[in-house]
Length: 504
Image (tube, rainbow, N blue to C red; front, side, top):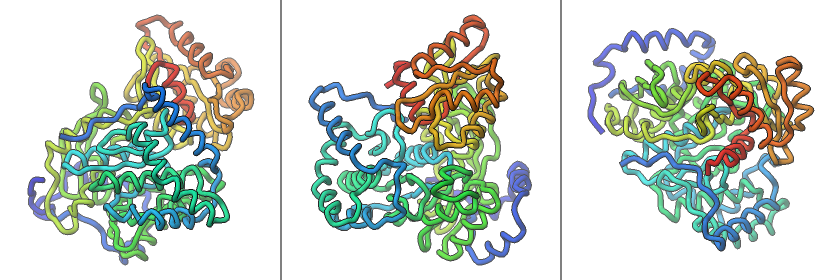
């Protein structure tokens, strides 16, 4: 790290003043809440982007992994929940509290959690910390969910970890009203793997919500809240404020809270929780933010305002303004983890920060997987995510004609998602992925016709046929015409498309 003078010695730049001024939707009543909370103001070889792993080449290892996947599939799925941490707490107890063996950065929010986690992981690794990252859901392989040193654990290690914790899982199963869920077992595996490694820091993404999420048995010294919007409304609440109430549960006593820009009602809830927990708060657009960004070949070039000063010339190989904001949040989280803005008046070493961000990869997030025509994958599955993806595509690619392939889950706001994409799709091919949660293609087509009009909607129940149809439509303009395909609607749809297109 390099020492820098206190930010009080240097007036804020005009650019950053503009950012602060632009955050004008803030309710004046927030000042009352904020008066009781300390605000965080600075006084003051990285891991490579991990590829999505393929199936194991060794038949015996592949067989063992499939057996583990089959056993896990017999448990409650990730969409069947009981709002309690009782079972996971019991598992942690019999495992010897592995989650207490390392400090953690805990990440919640509606959109951007996984990309932010990957950026945090890259930054910590660049500063020579051994990292463990736990994210969900996976794009293609279940092993993606647990990463060590910037890469998914091997299939062999995944199987070994499962076998190590299995006797303890069965012990807890026998003592509880309900068996541990799929997600609870994976969470226990991740925490055990991190302790066994051992890691210097864990980066943990919640599965859903916060208060009763299985990950919430850690005491995250840094709690990160990415933008909150409406999703999982049947479980988390029907307004941003209600959802924020659940997500605020990751804010622990005395923690540092990094808040991305939020709807005002959600911000009120989060800040009140921070006050109650005597937490230190840093808010995007106030204590940190994106000062400048411009589109660059293969991504974007950023100037970020961190808690310890400005970081110029940061190349991020991801597309979209939303990823720039995720980068600002990740940088502030890592600064806070190192005590910058509280105990230390300094900034992170600029060259190290640049190297870290340049390595970031986020599979399935505006990811280009084919050229001629260009095929892009994005895992947007709610209206806010779809709008961010649409804006990113419009800015970074400049397609003359874009064909959408959409396969969504039946429990999502499908109309809102389609409406966000309508301005950028010339035509849409509706389809389904292979899971039971997938929305019936005919039902999805009925909604699509209402949004796009009948002449712009094509129905292909099988995803492989949908991809072929979309590519054929794009190719009608000719090889050099600038048409493209965007596959979206679900992480599962994106993962299956990725496999069909020869990735992983």
